[in-house]
View (cartoon, chains in turn red, purple):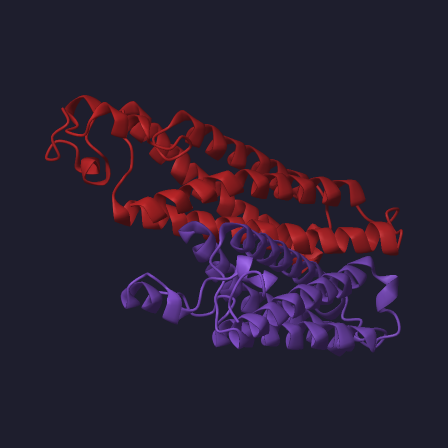
Length: 178
Length: 178
């Protein structure tokens, strides 16, 4: 069942634990949160959830499309959802086969993807926060704007970025180790 | 001249190359750009220059203080100038003594300082960029605002952050290596 010719995905996956030549101590040292672990899947699911909330809340306002930065926040959140979904599916596949990613090309892709998505989420959240603070605190013009929705969406974007950080750090750790 | 009792700063500095027990190959592997190297000093001087330009340009506008995010950009740029100046002076001291920083407490402080200053600069620049785009592109209200100054200051903040990155990466590299 685990032969590479039967499962092409095996070229990206480490052999099962029971077939591994490495001693048990090496297996125990594998980092939690990486693709192929349950913590990694929980992190991806959380990213999808909070990024989706950010998009949905922003979309409920009628005038967000007139502000370029809010459009960018929605676009970056959409990109985050796409990436986290791809990583979650990879995770589920790896868990179902009881395997873990170890090879260099896969680890480089994970690292680059996590770095780009977390950087975009942070920049989008900061830019939205700037406008939200301007409207709410400086101009005190919430009667004409959907301040609550803008703030909630921005807050969800920051939460998504905070959950991105452990994924990115683990990807970086894995990248440095391989 | 190089005895620790004479120069207290020696507890933070590596012994001179000529007294080192390590073979020449180890010395050659030292990373350029770290404290105690000329590239490190150039990076710090550039950070001070561009952060100062960001502060000065923003300060020339009469109404920047009415926008919280622009005030934060000035504050973060000021913090960047302070940190880069401290690091530049450390660099000059290390170069004049022909020594380099290697010990763990110093490297941790450099890493933490570079991480915090670069994160603040990026967040301030993104937030300012959000407001600049809102005023310039969305509201097209540059006749009433100092768009050119706001854009120039934001751009200088981004340039400062770009110069922060190699310093941060080198500090991280040093932190991981020590």
